[in-house]
Image (tube, rainbow, N blue to C red; front, top):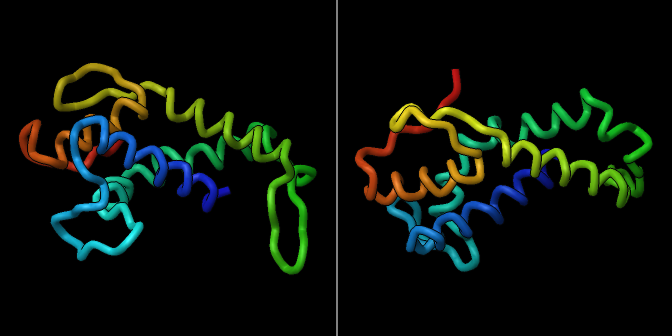
Length: 134
């Protein structure tokens, strides 16, 4: 589920970069590689535990995803179609959760936070402090 969640976040951050006018494949810190959204991956790091890890824990702890939603085959474990659907729902619920943005002192969803951090990463809104909670 972590891998699936990180893939979803890797999909959502390039969208946020494009939304604010940045190319997610061009980065200031890493050499560009074909097909690697370097800027989006850099922006993603602080959100891994806040969005994906939290969605996985919530999905398991609330029983949204259970052992019955897992299939073992050839030494690997995968989610059933129902398990994927349940996890996608947990991920989307987390993306819609509201958090307080310290810079502006108002609440935004994590989905909106990705866009704000992309703007901040490009220098459009002051310095780039990493968003943290608590």
